[in-house]
Amino acid sequence: MSIKLQYICNACGSLSHKWSGKCLDCNAWGSMEEQIIDKKKEMVFNNGAQQTLELLNSDLLIEKTRIITQFSELNRVLGGGLVEGCAVVIGGDPGIGKSTLLLQLITSLVCDGMDCLYITGEESTNQIKLRASRLGVINNQTKLLASNSLEDIISTLDANPGLKLVIIDSIQTINSNKINSSAGTISQIRIVSHELITYAKKNNIILILACHVTKDGQLAGPKVLEHMVDTVLYFEGDHNNHFRILRSIKNRFGSVNEIGVFEMTQNGLKEITNPSELFIMNRDHNISGSAIFAGIEGSRPLLIEVQALIAPCNMPMPRRSVVGWDTNRLAMILAVLVTRCQINLSNYEVYLSVTGGIKINEPAADLAVAAALVSARFNRPVKNNAVFFSEIGLSGEVRRVNQPLARIKEAVKLGFNKVVCSAFEGLEQTDKVMSIKHVQEIKKIF
Image (cartoon, rainbow, N blue to C red; front, side, top):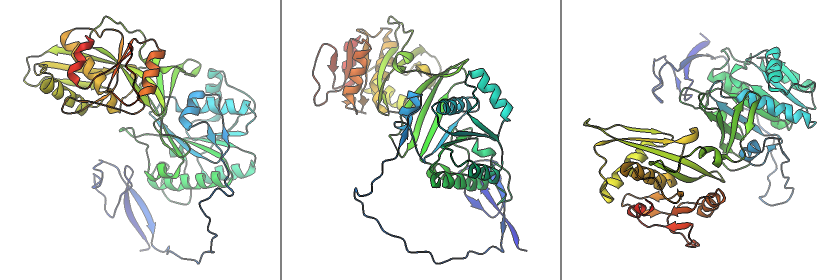
């Protein structure tokens, strides 16, 4: 027979010649999908043309033109705006606001005189018009197309040579007739993405792809999709919270881990220009177990409130619950407080929460977490409206972290009276800045 089958994992892309219920590489259950291979097709190698080599110098250096959008938060995440010919992937949970953001973006750019096309594979054009009417962004210039065929989309793009921006919502719904598999499979996403990105770069078109995510929060489809595009953005947030965070995971034209903060309203997404006030608003200064952390997200300083609750427990293994931080990191801080500071926490349940729905990934939050735990343990609120940042080592020493001056400047700008951190070169001891060397010194704040 000239036809044979192979099986591909839609989670990691690994291949297998027989089906199994679990992928042997990534251990994902029910992820193996059937793929047909034509054995008649043989690889033919043709001699290519000799190419001209270039030197790494400044001759013929062309800077990419950036297009500034009306969303300053989006410009920050993108590294200053959209770059001509770039390919961007934006992922997020269903209903988080991806389509809303993209519709607001394309209508604002059209109003600025840019020729744009919105391609939807999930909805009809009438549904897009209803959403635009609800958001108050309906106009006569934005072009819409409802199609699931890659070949039809490419033909439409050829018929409209003046397009500068194309949005596809979403990439999982587009399929090509070159392969015999349904839309959303690994093979379809790979070939559709490759064809669209190649066409966009050849014609200097900005391509934005909306992408589904798996239950683990990763982009659905092959991992090679993240390598093919220039920028990968994640839209984070909780459906029970009206705030949304747009975070850059990969960016060839800017820094990564930049965040933009939005608020979901009845009229669409609204920018939050000062997120520090958002994450520390409605804070009671007389409550124990609360500490303010001066963090850095990309290049932006951000003040975040960390709350801790310690309750007596008679169980052999007290509960440790964390929201917005690393559970293993909390266990390490608790061990340091017990061993180095002689603070007994073995018979207490510990609950730690980062307010505002944001997740902290940097170790600079150690000192703020320790301050919140000590405050909760002794039921004493933090005095002097203090802000904390620094890493804590296993011996209890307080270590320096990156960009300390930017953190201090943000705290002082928002009116905080005391900044507690590790000593670093260039630090001037003032009434508003106090450096400590060991975690035991944190008791001075109470």
